[in-house]
Amino acid sequence: MNKKQIEQEWGKLRLKIIENKLKIDGPYPPDIVGRRELLLFAQVYLCNILDAKSKEDKWAEGFEAEIYSKVLEIYYNGDKNV
Picture (cartoon, rainbow, N blue to C red):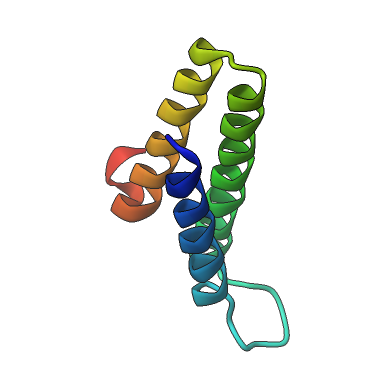
């Protein structure tokens, strides 16, 4: 992933977080909580990709990118992959 792709992914994650925010006063339903957790995991792995890129660690960058893509795959496909 290059820097432009990473910036685009950050933008997508921000939009998804806003999209999954309900206007309710109380606990979120479990399905929304699960989706928000996946978005947080995706943010962590995207951050790890940037860290590996700054350290020029190609192995770690590839590993983190693979985990990132798996998290998003689960996010978009729901419980089908779990």
